[in-house]
Length: 464
Image (cartoon, rainbow, N blue to C red):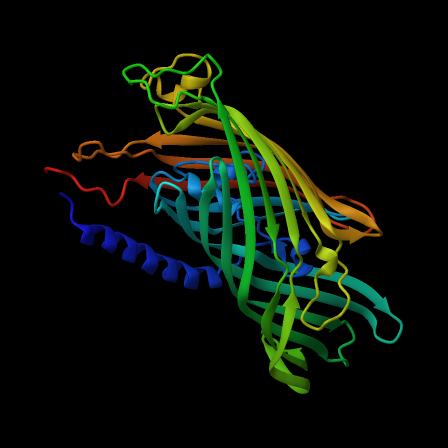
């Protein structure tokens, strides 16, 4: 028989890792985009490498060995204890009217998630991932009537992270309900400088630091229907199961509750000059406030999607699947810390994608064989009307995606042990914005890397 203290040590190690990474995530500079100037910054979609490779679909995605934060109702599909973690490397080329393109890149930790089944119908998940990302450095030159040529510089860094605890329960046949409770925390540091060419005028700076710390909630449902296609995939060497239904259809939806985040802000306005060596020398303080309390109102959101595919009844895999989603967020209801009217507009995102495993999708039906036939190939596309506008024109974000799950199986002497671990890679080719009206266009390539580890926990053997 196995001893339970081993499993408890694994759980404790995962908890410690969550705390370490949460501290590490606070210090990351994750964005190099001027679009992160707006609102709380670039909104992270909370997608893992697997979903990124499929255009970002998640509403109707159910997997027995992968955590899906996008819809908490999916946790009830977990059959194995699952650890997901990964990062991203971003490359971006920015251009605007009358300027040469600028290239930037950044990389950072993207997510860590742990999910496991508690009973046959009850699943639970934990995760830490960015909620929003801030990182920009913008300069504009203006001819001021009273001061002459003036350069305005806007810089910002930081963001908001979230720790998620979610539960899902299969309440009746194929219907599952779930809810995520998220703790949001983080700090954003922004600066606005006015740099005058007239040496008799001192430079000025307004610097603010905003910290948020509060809870948010989102809920979801998934309804799954299965049936027999009369062309069941039978795996060589496997016995028939009681459930030979190999076709599935899933309808899923989510609702994100709007919430007010408790916030504190400190700010200072002062003048300064530069020394001969380029160091800043502060002069006079115009205003100062510390830990001013306030709140930031987050918008509500809705999502709906469906998936359709064929599974292998004898194994914990699907031969192929396709999915389509629509998600919308009421960013017009966003209220910043100072309570001023928001310039953001309602947004929506359309996503479509899927995957296939050649070994099962094209009739080979062998558990072993050519390694490339056992890889899960992912594909997708997306279009988003973002919450940013220039001259009454919404800024679009669109692209296509590709990904692969590279399986590897850890050796184990345990009888009946189950491991379906994979290395996950995803790539997104996209474009955001447009080149007119003083806006910026970004062409980007995002590379996502992840590792998915699976095991069956809490088993007792009759012998060892």
